[in-house]
Image (cartoon, rainbow, N blue to C red; front, side, top):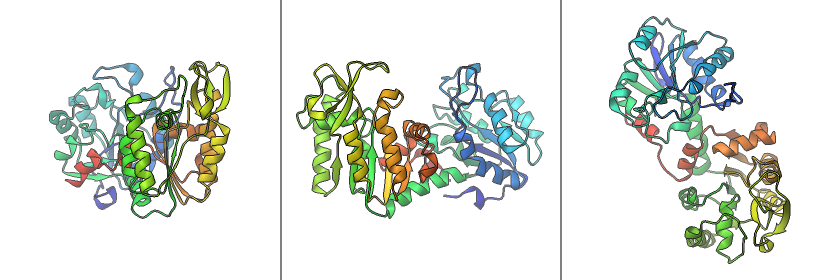
Length: 393
């Protein structure tokens, strides 16, 4: 896969697809700009090499409608401050006005195109839309790891029409960290898998069986595994149709000599509510009309001990409903345990990176991925469609 360093970009119109899908409050103030900061290396490299910079992204889910609250204008302002350069905000991402604006560019100029998803053709991967985007540039760079698992026009179809296509530094780094962690990991390699559903993680679990030495399971998905032992879990969320699948995963792990850790206690509540009364109980003693919403302190201690000798850690998914303070302790304890380890630690998944930021342990994690679905797709052993598209150019 070619990277931006392999291409002569001096004086050329360089279209860089990034992921500026940043969180904003109701007043359109950016509350976390880490996704913008993550691609500054690529953008600064292009500027240092006298490129004309055309930046494209989506934000939110406008579904082909022009929604002012999902404009990239606030991003243009923040990006300008971070680069210390003027960023011109285009009114659209295609069309004669945009083309005229780009034709006037000089080396070192920066234009941010408006939300790609204002056009429904983007998510449909339509060739005509991709061709219009491609006609804006001389060189195409994909630095949007977080959307590289999607078959969208700006990351897949566009590569058929651009003269030259390559990867940016962020995409290269994301793939490199993950591939190195699985191809030749320092062992023990521990996979921490959490979140709400086994159904969304089963592919990752099945694939990781070929790589890991230990599994640590948390979040509501742990309930489905625990149910296979016949425990009464009260009102806890259980995917009953996947209990046998969960049992099969544990059986395969045992056959391969993989240690498989499940919660031994839980923080439970009667209702899914931040103000609900809570208890900490052993897994075997969850009351009939209560539900498990976080791992308990004994589980946190057990998991910390399981991580003690880890040399490589891959973590996807929280241990509980960390958005509610009463049920955040397990996830934050896991963040501290991972941070305190001597392992190469790679954390991915939208919820997980938010939890790491909230825990204050960001600086002690080796690498925090910008991708959720893309990170999970790599855990499943899949080739990302956008990466395949770059490799085929």
